[in-house]
Structures are given as structure tokens and as C-alpha cells.
Amino acid sequence: MNLRVDWQASVSLVGSVVKWLSVPLLFPLLIAAYYGEFGAIRTFVMTIVIALVVGSSLERLDPDPDLGAREGFLMVALTWFAVSIVGGLPYVIAGNQITILGQFPYIDIVSGPSTLADPVNALFESMSGFTTTGATVIGDISFETHSRALLMWRQLTQWLGGMGIVVLAVAILPELSVGGAQLMDAEAPGPGIQKLTPRIAETARALWKAYLGITALEIVLLYGLFRLGLFIGQPLAPEMNLYNAVGHGFTTMATGGFSPEARSVEAFSALAQWVIIPFMVAAGTNFALFWHVLNGEPRKLIRDAEFRFYVGVLAVLSAILTVLLYTHEALVFVPGGPPIAGNVESSIRHATFQLVSIVTTTGYASMDFNTWNSSAQYLLLAAMLIGGSAGSTGGAIKIVRWYVILKSFRRELFTTVHPEAIRPLRLGGRALDERAVRGIYAFSLLYLVIFLVSTLLLFLDAERAGGPNLNSLEALSAVAATLGNVGPGFQLLGPMNNYLPFSDASKLLMVVLMWIGRLEIFPVLVLLTPAYWRS
Image (cartoon, rainbow, N blue to C red; front, side, top):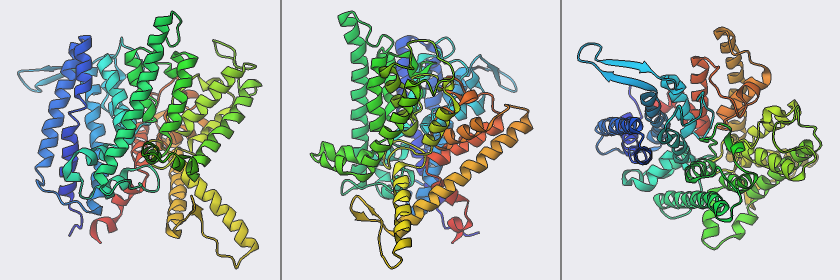
């Protein structure tokens, strides 16, 4: 068969990314050295060596790769899977005691207490990290079971995946500057990426600079609360030490949701939660708008139609949830701690925090929303399908698509009354191409079809495997949380629980859902069509 795709060029560039993944792996290695975690030092040294060897070997397939649009799709799809495999190695190595033997089988492996010692669990956790999903299969999130270095690597995978592994590669690797536009378009969340500068590599660097700057600002503010509390003798954010500030800075701006704390953001003070909320809102905003603000064009942010719709949706849904919490209508039982019903501050904070966290697909929890009734939980389930802005780090369908769909419905009503009228759809004063509108409808329909079919598959596999015994809300939320890169689901999969009860087959299905959800489905599914390879 005569292939029209130069797969060697694609795989060679995947090798480049895998090789350079060894650089961020140095960060947890330094953490391990600082805390004297000698087992973790061995873990990350081994992973770095494997990344360098495998990456360099793949690079040799094509020393001078020529990247076209087809090769770009293949490279992006394979890159995300490859880095998730390599990123899962520290979990497997740390979770198993590996001894080199002098005779066959030459290696003896004894599993430790970590649930990540299992390769399927390690791949699930790594894919969840890089795709910024935040679903976890860790049974015990603590420093007693896992090293500080390993849990920080878990946080860092989300930060790397937030703005995009390939966007970062385009920004720093000269061989990817040619064809970089196709790569970024294939990887970027939303209908398309906005070119901010004449050269696509400069655009990639601009996006990453904004991302890095806002991340650093959040870390400074969170750790500043901790230090200020010590200075004045008042516990402003007593648990927000430098380790936690850095860890949550990584996963907030990535809309990731991983936390070194077993109880997520519930472990921190109300003031720390208030600080995190605007950063989650920022993470769900198109990062191109921040570039315009930094270049002296703040009106572009205020006038942006998608941004105004995004803020409006957050405000309305947060207000509804606030009323439900304040009047006790949303609570099945009152969790321990300060009262929520009848408390204005607590009701506003928990409603706003949780709604923003779910819509932006961050996945943090300021409280266990398993204590809420079904009406509040179904509201959050609907919010899982909304998503952040195009060009943000958020997942799901994206707010801009919903905005266009609603405007399209309105146009259909108008043209039903006035059939002779020609009324193009406009976004921010600009007429949309009808092909783009059809693409939005196609994506949204395909998303919902995959959502429903995958829910059915989870039910069938749970029945085949003899568990878990899922109800409809649990199954729907499991698929919505993984396909939309949200993280936590409901009840069995609540924010303080995990995905361990699922069989390996269901976990692998959700790995694929996280993968295709992060890449917006089409860049992966197009690889399955014969026309892609032969026409």
C-alpha cells in the first residue's frame, strides 16, 4: 500500500519531544535531592535515562523531518500518548522494588503499597495529568505512601499539558517552527488558534510567557498569604506552604485539579479558596486576550463576545447554586465544619468555587459535593459539558461553541418568520464562515455521541467485570469527567474518591477518552480513516 503520510518524520519529531521531556523531569529530581528522598532520586534518574535513550533512538528515524498537515496530525496524537507513557514511568518505578538478577529472568519486581505500581493505573494517572483531567487512581494521597518528588511530578505533568506539550515544543524547538501552525491548530483547545505575531513560534512563546507569568503570580499570592499569616500571628492560610503553593499554582492555571492534599482545596482556608477562584476564571479565558492586555489593549478583553458570554454563564449558574446552598435546598446532609445554609459568605464561596471549577474543567473541590442533592449534582453535570474558552487550558465542548449554537438557534427562529432574509452569524462583529458553523455542529454532535456510547460501554464493562455497580449519574459523570478533562465525578467518583473501582478495560477506555478529549476528537479520529493514509 502506498502511504501518503511520512510516518517516520512524525515519529522522529515525537522522539524529539520525548527526549526533551527529560528537562522538566529534572525538577522533581531536585525536589527529591532537597528532601533527601533517595528512592525518588533513583526513580527520576532512571526515567530521565529512558526518556533520553528512547527519544534519541526515535529521532534517528528521520534526521531531517519534513512536516506537512498529515504528518502534523499524526505527530500531535502520538506525542500526547508517548509523553503519557514516559510520564507514567516514575509511578511504576517508584511503586515497585526492582532488583537486577544475575540469571534469567534477570529482573525481580516486587510491588509496593502504591496503587500506581500497576502499569494501567500509572498510564491512567499520567494521561490524566498531561491532559489536565485530574481523575485519579491513587488510593492514598499522602507523603507516607508517595514521595514529595513524585507528587510534585504529578502536579507538573498538568502544568506542562495545560498550555500544550506541542505548543511548548514549537516555542523552543527550531525544527518545529516550520509546520508549527498546523501542530498548534491540531492541539489547541477550541475551534482554532489565533495567530498573535507574524511567526508562529513567537505566538507559541507569547502564550507560554502569559501562562508562566500568571502561574508565578498565583504562587506568590498563595505563599504570600502563608508568610503574612506567620508574620501577623493569624492563620490566613496555614497549610499553604511553598510546596503546596507551587503545586496548586501548577494545576490551577492548567485547569488540572490535582492536589497533594487528599481533600483537595477543602484542606485550605476560605481566604486561600477566594484567591484561587479568579485564577481558575483566568485559566478558562482565551490566553490571546491576556496577550492583548499586556500589549496595552485591555478593551479587547472587555469587548470580546466569548469572554462576556463566559463570565455571564459563570455568574448566572453560580447565583443559582448559591441560592440552593443558602436555602439548604442543595444539601442532603450538612458536612462537618462551618455552617453553609444561611451563611452568605460560605454559600457564595462554595457555589462560586465549585461552579467555576467544573465549568473551567479545573476539578478542584472546596467541599465534598457528594453531600449535595441530585438537583445540584445534575446542575454540575450539565456544567461539565460547557467548558472554558477557546484558546484556554479548559476542556469540554467550549463556551464559544455553545455561544455560536445559541446564536444559530436564534437565527433559525428569525429566518422561519422571515424566510427571504439573509442573516450571517457574527462573533464579535465578524461574520462566521458557514463551514465553521457546520464544523461546530459536527464537533458538538460527535462529542455527545461519544459521550453516550462511552457511558453505555462503561455500564456493559461494569456488568461484565462484576463491578462497580454503577447508577446513571455515576456512569454519566465518569464519561463527562474524562472526555471533558474535568476530573471528579459524583457519588462513587466524588471529589474525595477515586477511579480505582473500575476494571482495567474501563480505565483504558477512559484513558482514550482523556486523550481524544484533550485533542478535540478530530485529530485522533482522522487517523482512523483510510482517506488520511491513502488518498
